[in-house]
Image (cartoon, rainbow, N blue to C red):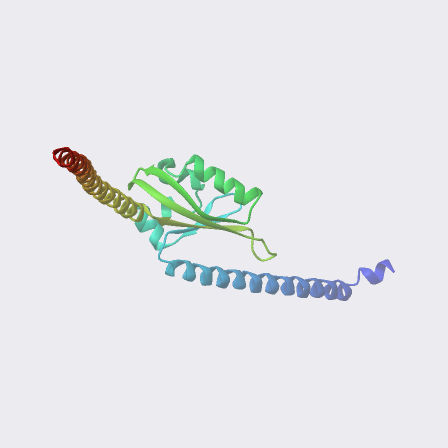
Length: 222
């Protein structure tokens, strides 16, 4: 039995089988790698077409990639962004307590964050009001868990809304003053009419009394 196992032909056959298995595994891994690369390229192409800033992170909150809009908005480049911990980006300008809380929630509790508003002074672009939307994409055998973070700058929108509100409040104040002035004039007119009416009533009463006195005197004369 030992001699049969040590037969060179048997060893060659076993090696060939082993090589075939390894080649099959290698082909499978290459196929998986190609599919992952294709999926990633497809996702990145979609991400690049999104007009608002978008970041793709792994489960540890390290940036896998970001779209052109993100780099343009925050005046950064891929080299100083990719593979970096999100809170370390841009000289730690993303180390925002509100952002930490929201991302902690999406990792531990929720799958989404919808319209979460933060206000922060960024080193590169100044004070901004941002609206955050995030999605946690569950992992698969071919893909680790990833998190999509979309960022919308609503600073100008908020500014415009504030200006509209301020202008409306001013118009309401002006209109209120006008109405108050009209109301004062009406009150004055009512007071004048009441005085006139009172005087008219008094005059009428006096005339009635006078007429009665005249009648009485005429009777005495007769």
